[in-house]
Length: 292
Length: 283
Image 1 (cartoon, rainbow over the protein chains, first blue to last red):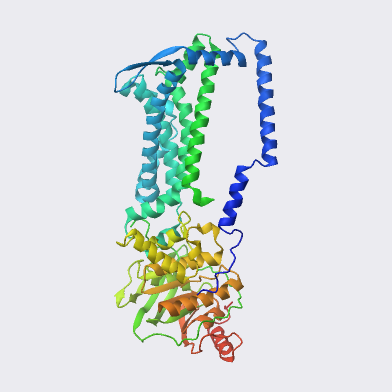
Image 2 (image 1 turned 90 degrees about the vertical axis):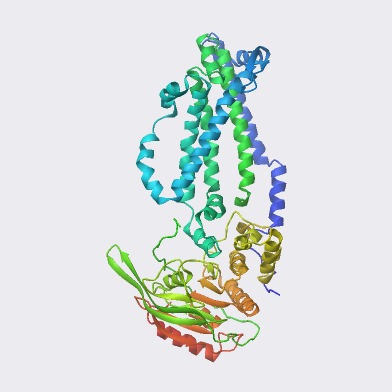
């Protein structure tokens, strides 16, 4: 039997280390408490300054925290109708919820389509030097065009509306994911490919599936996470041109001088972003648990 | 395959001194004389920035079935290039390599590889790493797991099966690398300075472990190193490479019985002889 079974690994000892890590996560260390207290103090100070500043201005210029909160409640109380796409029937829901669902109907499909295409093309150009060389000039020219500039095509192809807004969100998602996927795949160390080849991986598809994608996963997931945030900004802008949703409400309310409603919806976007980012971080952490 | 094109040789192994003493249960070298690997007049020529570079010239030797052969040489003599040619990761410009009579044209499961930097897959557990090669074959999930655990037992790391590589020390990671290479039952085990990244004490233990695994499995081993002590401690025969372009200076038989002691007269004499063959540029 091996004489090395008592050898101690460098810094960690498997189970012991894991237990210690978990214990740390359950309790809040004093340093964490201190940081939370600071954050709380900063927030209170900010709200106080905001409230004071708002007192000096009419609501249509600078709504205060109380007005915004009231407007928020108002948006939850007022009913609006939502036509479920595809199924056709109509529901009455709080306006805030309706607007959120409308924005999500641009955001989610746009993000999914854009990210999928971006990752697929990025993996392809990261893997194939020939393809990468062929596409590089085209990519260089198209990439700097901001998603919103594609409005022109959105209008003539889809008209101002839901499909157009989704299209623009997709473009927003595409580039980040393309670059991250390409970089992740191109950056897979050759060493790993050599080892895998010596272990019987002899065709490209298997190599990509078993070695390249897992290796590139951290970078690809970072791209997805970035695009999750970016697409919220894009969807609001995309809706400004006439597709219904949270973005459209912000501009509508401003045009009606209901800035309190505008700000309420801005905070809604912020909250939704935090939730989606938080959810994704959870997914990312479990996929990448091997990184420790 | 898109990724597999001829790359440039990396031969910058740092010279290290070691107190390693090979020791294993005393067993006579086990080989029946049949030729396993034939390196036939191998030469390697690169197009460099400032003209052509001849890295290897006329390298010719055989490795017999079940033998433990070390290739020794100073940094820059082309021994890593030679390793890569035998492994199939590069193609010689002249001559060729034959395994069991068949020419080597690319990397494959018949030549297991163990590298200095371990090259474990970080996203897989230890068991996942060892069973990687087995997944290419048509084995059932449980059969693959069983075989992988068998290999982990062989290297003495069965209890780390569910851990990730980052949780293991260097020496343990290398043993996992050896288990992973052996899992697919290669015809020959190729090792490129596998213990250069571990401390001297661990290296000594790993020598003992490797020799034990070698006697238990009867594998043919080709071990590349810059460390003359290591070569004398481990090998049945030592191929001495030297010069630029790298050429075979000599092939020296190490007839010392194992376990071998560094202080033994025979050991010291052989070591001196090998250093002399390598020349001034030795470590």
